[in-house]
Length: 570
Image (cartoon, rainbow, N blue to C red):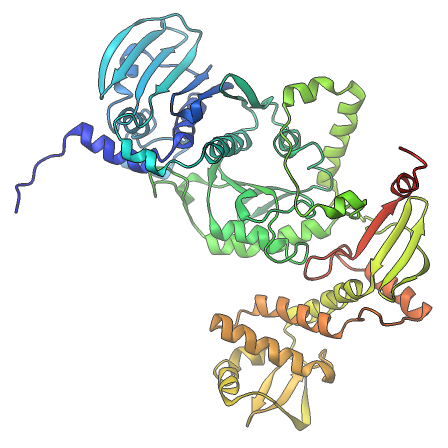
């Protein structure tokens, strides 16, 4: 066996860089977080050749003295903690003292910094050594330039992705940092071109529009609440703007962007029945919590955190999200071009240009609209407009009109939504009220399926289902005889797929299955009384806009669209 020896510091830093510096976007994240910790209010990021040529971050923060500037590149040198107990009360984004030495081990760095009390000082570092230093002119703050990234680790280039992917990663981290600190002005320049910028005026709806597009806040819901002394501030985008991945569910804990599956899944669960299968929402979740209840010291990148009572928080968050979405009105999905869109494509807008182009009156109207977001959940809102029935198309779509245009209602989707909410509410009660069958119902299932039911008999009894000798002996009072086979099939399917019974998921799936299989079908002729009852029941739904699977119930064709199709207007 070879002798054990202490690792050279340069080698240790290079190894650590493998965790901290995965790609140019990682460098930007670490440098900008340092600027934020330095109380900067304006941060400019310049990227050349995907960041491989150079990354420059300039801020107007507190700056560093000459002595601190030299210490900053020593491993584990930090101004943010000094004792073990400080780890339980971390308020800064950085604290480990690993970022700068790790970046230095795979790049060349030039840095100039100035405080209010001292003159600016410049350092140039290569191969973990200072190669040049001296006074330099600079306003208060810090300017750092990272050049020739991965120049001494050529193997890292094998793992670099396409130019599009790397620029997209840079843009993504810029957006997360901007959203995590809406009170800071950010600018992103790539190859001498201004790509994105934010005002830093703490206006989150306006910031969302600068990132995702001008219309993204239409129909947005704002959830502001407290769960077990944990502050929740969520911005829930209209479900019509969907994504194919969950990446746009952004979570910020004490102004730190983090990745947390349980919390993001809670947001997605709150959108259940608003979205189609395998589609995900756009939303922001800001959590304010005592720092002692969060462990950010899990990974050098500090994106993964451990949260006390994480399960409890996510369990209580999902119904709050759903309640907020159901508590106001959404614009009815309208116009043919909008229906054709499979997914919302983001539009890049320079927020400075956007703000300067708005008139004073437009700004007042926009502020009033944003102020009303907080009141949506507290006011009784008419979710559907006045509709006048005029006929049926293809035995499937009910036609309505009003002074705004023509509306098409999918009668099957509408009936599904009505039945879904009825059954979901009844299953949710888990009432002990049940019928004991005089003649037990035969179960047309295999012995293996019956064995699965028997193994979960205690939990099934909670919803009023009991079995004996491969027969159903008891069922809930709210369940019709014609739907007994549906509930048994749903229960067996869930037990087969998950090897357990999740009452929350079972409630949702049962409501979907029963409502779908027993709802009014397409091409089923309805009387005028049935049509009026369908519309009336739909108006009483919490979510009259989509069926339980996320498909639209109503589609609007405005008068303007119709006139365009007839070439009356151009």
